[in-house]
Length: 311
Image 1 (cartoon, rainbow, N blue to C red):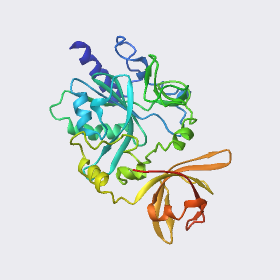
Image 2 (cartoon, rainbow, N blue to C red; image 1 turned 135 degrees about the vertical axis):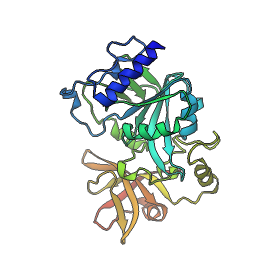
Image 3 (cartoon, rainbow, N blue to C red; image 1 turned 60 degrees about the vertical axis):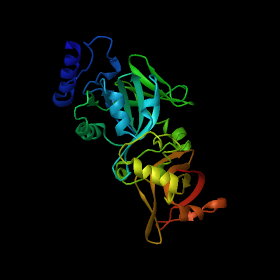
């Protein structure tokens, strides 16, 4: 169709020629929130986590996403989102993301770590003869919005909001971003996957079964055999914990005890003079932090457990 061809031409211009606008002259079937910010706009001031997003759309979009990602994509209704993950064949987590179904044949991915353009480049290798387009969007503004029902998706024409119960995540092309959403999500055990830990962790370490980001009974997808084996046989010895640290650490930092790596930091936030963090810890190390005991690592950092999550 002429309309679809025009969309693809504009998408190509945006990706390869750095076109300053996208969608402004297109009909209302495209959303204005997809417009790129002006190159010198103050809205481009970075926040801790910009919105890295990509679109998967076309007649085969649902089948393609269901075959590639770990969650039960076929059960996701339009106007809702779910956690999902893209795994490598060994079951390690490449990317963790919010998967929002904007329409029957269109999905938006908001990455929880990683670069959308890199993910899109690799995903396109698996399109083959499917009628589907995978498009990385320029980095968007990510901000905290008002409370909205969990897993709801709201599109007001200028931004898309993902409902997170006590708040929402607002994705827009313009405006001012903020990080206020990070603390309640950290406290809920919603992990963020820093670049250093991509392709390193298995789903149980991030509690992805609890978040329904991986499914056991949906059929084949990359890494599915490993997911099923770990679920039914157990044996994985690293899990997710909310902790308080004695000193600030960066996402991706390694935790060492007696010279060996025993965990890693996914995210850390200073709130009211308390350093809250999500970490992955070896089970034998976490066991020593029970009953209010404090762990001391090789660099002198101390850790107290607040909450722990199963796989």
